[in-house]
Image (tube, rainbow, N blue to C red; front, side, top):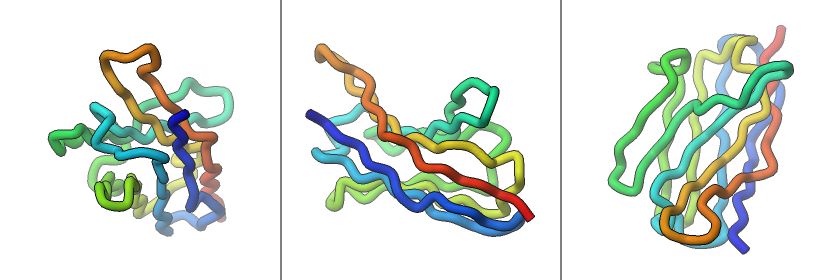
Length: 118
């Protein structure tokens, strides 16, 4: 059973930074892509950042220039460095992994809360 476990969420003031971590129970290279999603209260879950096996990276427009997704293949870790945080970034952040060709394709972590407030 593949597990993704997030950590690093918390409370931060506007303009602050946080780094989220996602630990995978198997090689992250087994995934086609690893992503960070977020869901704010009353809103749909949205894709924030994505990194493919081939190191192609994409961000939602609202975080470009502020967030950075990265990974450490040796440690089976995926990170989301978040800078210049604003209250609009407040949400539960989820790690997601996608695999093609098997009975299960989407894997989710349990989520970590990020709250940006003064």
